[in-house]
Image (cartoon, rainbow, N blue to C red; front, side, top):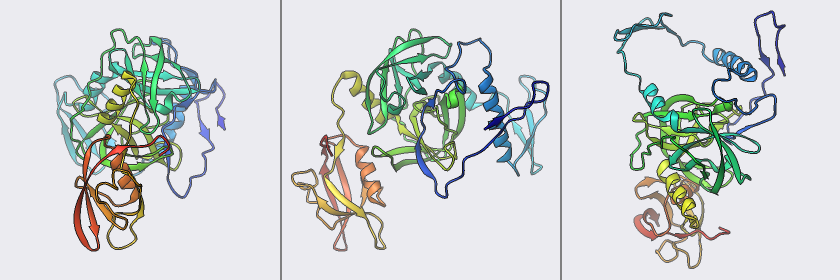
Length: 387
């Protein structure tokens, strides 16, 4: 329910908020569902602000204020002249010196926003970015069920794009479109991420195109189970909301490190726990889509459950006959505690780590067998179509 005052009075917006579940749930960062006049497709650049967006901004502003008690930053309202030092007084009373010109998030925005696009599918809005000439990378659930979409570029121009293919297991899709002179976003394909490093999210949350938020990389190699699969993702606290799906997560050098796809939430909106597909994984899948080759997923060939004793891990309860694990010497009753030295605490961890590899990759499993530590090397196979 939205209520507004008469036109001659200051606008006040209230809303009936949904009840908060007792436990957080995993939710795809879904594209905005277009139900005019709540959120119509964006107008061309230069056409002025849209009324519904103004109302939404007021609502969100109220929610932000309500959630920000106890933290404040007092700054001079007047902009500082270029080349000077800016002082800011915190609520605790300390003074900070902010050197002029050091704005890493602004630098990332300037470098990457021209490569960002908004995707308008038949049922809603999502995000994406030009990663190669003529191709846009996005999330599979943004274009689900669509063969063609409208791609809106940073300058407000738009073009019809063709969905080349999708991989629902990793939630990655590629759109073919005439990108003209749109710059290609640089990709950090070989970067080793560090927990705590700067992370910048770019996209169209709530249909508000060319939006930038920032935070940090909260965790790397985080196994996450969703409705389609288990995969290893980047976790970030950079604000991600519906409409950010398919947008870029970038580092301080302005390179894309991931594709934003989902959040943990109690309300359906950002709670500071978002996830992105690592760009190396997304790019590899995109290359297969463009080449028209089948997308194959790594396969270990085991069934298991979470360990129940003092030692965390994945307990193997069944081994698929003629599968990769069967030929490696892995046994029923083995407790897998790591894959290539990356810890495994549960069966979800094991499944996610295996999904991060490609068929024919060799991995070393740390295993506890009859109280003894052993290493088992497995060459991964191809997951069956019905597996």
